[in-house]
Length: 251
Image 1 (tube, rainbow, N blue to C red):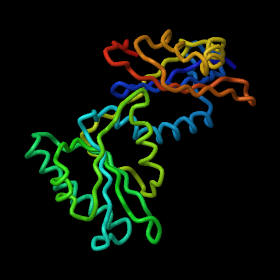
Image 2: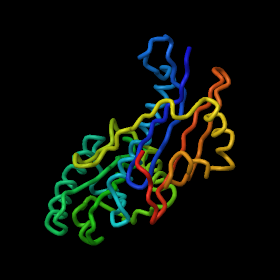
Image 3: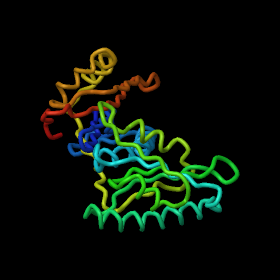
């Protein structure tokens, strides 16, 4: 069985995620397709689903935008999930009209409700392009309390915020506006050999700068190498960012 290594690359704004993993071709046909094993592909899909929120944030928001924490006071406690979604839908309508009027823009947002009936009080995390005053945002919400924080980028971007927003995610899906850019992956197979993958994984912990050779103009912020003792292949996920003033080469 032939094996090659595949790079699955997501670029979102000034951030890039690369998954490096083996794919296999059972036959000797000239045009045989190299595929990941089903368990590898499933785990990759699950991980990408969790990181989907971070990619949406990196691709669509800047330091001019904000993170809102929307909570309900005792007078406006919603009745279950349907009540939370109804309150958010009404707020979203009011906020969209205000942004259109004050900023001349369309509302952009990613929101994740959190909480359970009879448990933690419902609240909503929301990243949005609403650059309005605190008093205006509080009046538009009108359901209780609101906290407003600026978005802070760095080598890790908004990855930490994304993980925090999803920590108690008990709803069926995230809430997002339809006008968001949703990065698609670029896949390359065969550029990295098995021996090169082994070398990269061996050096990844102590020498993340090695990735500058593969991805010029990008800098690694975190590296997660893994060796599968069962099939004896290396797997790698690396997180990179574009340094300010740098010119990253297209993938």
